[in-house]
Image (cartoon, rainbow, N blue to C red):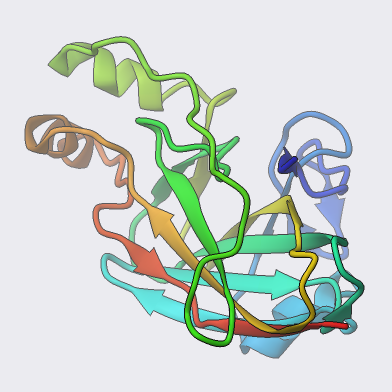
Length: 214
């Protein structure tokens, strides 16, 4: 019912419009340097039509943003939602490449569709595969795996696109999203910090986006 996919952007470590992008599977992921105002981020790849773009500044040098592909949808429509993680800190940030709505040890995106009285009307969530139990030494090796974790340097943004099914009922709904950090222990986080691998540590909310179903 819910599906997740990478942004349809071919990067492969090439220079794109003068901005450095991240190497990875063709036409699957997106990362770009962002050193000016938030509106540049929206216009850069032709997203001017996407609604609800705002930035939520979280703790630990992270800003989390939620956008939608429209402001008005028909009942039971599939809405394409973009979630963007911006590194507003001074050191590199590491985020799981396939972060999604499925909860897991690597972190996730918690997304609610709230009706006019605050009830969550989305379908049930899902759980992802859990990482095996990692020793203190294993955690550094795990986060160093570039096929699974992306390094977001200061001023850069990494994004994912999620597809969510909207309710049958008509009305105004609020999309509420939170970036959930990896479920690492305090010891594991300290090992990562000592080796220059910062990961999200606290829940980072995005400003609420309002949509209409009619």
